Image (cartoon, rainbow, N blue to C red; front, side):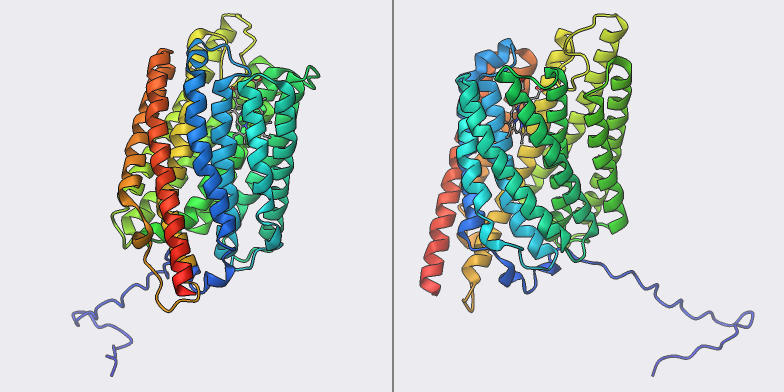
Length: 476
Ligand code: HEM
């Protein structure tokens, strides 16, 4: 029988123990996975995207090896450094973002993928398009660049349409959905700016190079990739840590701050001198707010999660978050140096571009800003996530139609992942050092370490796929 308490307390009478405060129900990460087997795409689709990303990662380090002297000398423009950058941004980041978003969003938003039959097509176009773009950049052939850009542009637009169709019908997860719409808006700006930059190299520039580059950087790195990383993290991290899903209102506030930062930076690209500097400073402030909200919720998820130790993935995520903070600090340095240049009336051609002010110091800070954002934050985060999610996804596929499927660790070649993690971190440190010192030998060392890691990752991926096929054959 439940204890009964007098309705009015008399002075001196024993006070009943307070009823336990009812904690708000905690939504734990990964609960949406229950019954999600039916929303899995055919294995060839996500593994095709991730396989392409594995190969482009190796290609990026090879391109950096070709481009080390040019990166150290720093003339900018077409060349192997730009090819290496796009092997990462398009080949690794965009391919993985396509695979992850097309597979994760239907699972997380509890609806089958709309037009699932078309899910593999953007990837089939993005791979040759990225090859054309990177070869056109590396060999300085604008026509190859333009041809590759046309094909990759269709791929990115097709992915955008698929994503929009799925976001439109999403149930729940408004924070994730807001980040998704923000990334889609930025994708439109990315396509426009990429087209303008290619036209510039074909000799028909629609607007100045500085404006095009600034818009492209803001839309691609922070808009499309940055917002997707922030949004998908709120699905992935709670799932990895079996921890609480961040409160929707915090996710919405962070997403709005992030989207505003991108919008301000995009407008700043077309303003002159002081107004541009003011808007870039405001964009940085919004970026700091978005990152602070994000890191606070992620730390809570990790602290309260049932799985305390995320192993190597945890290390990579911490490095990625530190790099995101460094990116914003470097952005502030670039804005400050540009402001000094403007005050000294140097009137440099690069002033107003977030990736390179007019002075030598400004250009070096601008390059470090791009390296910290692309290799330090986005690529390191992605590697951390792929190390954990690929075995997990393979185990889900292997379990289909089986009474008892394999565990993710049974499919994983752990030593290869450890080698990839260490080599990537070494390559990142060397890349930052080589960029700061403008030293080709240090950049070659970075390329060698990065390539060793990328090959280890390729070995892991090949073994994973072989074990998955074996399980599917023996189970079927
Ligand atoms: C169709 C796809 C794309 C094409 C055709 C393309 C083309 C270009 C070109 C021609 C440049 C050279 C600008 C110059 O210095 O004259 C450039 C720079 C750059 N791109 Fe892309 N790009 C594409 C996609 C992306 C994506 C998806 C990202 C990031 C996620 C990205 C990030 C960058 C960055 C960071 C720079 C350097 C900006 C700077 O130094 O100011 N690009 N791109």
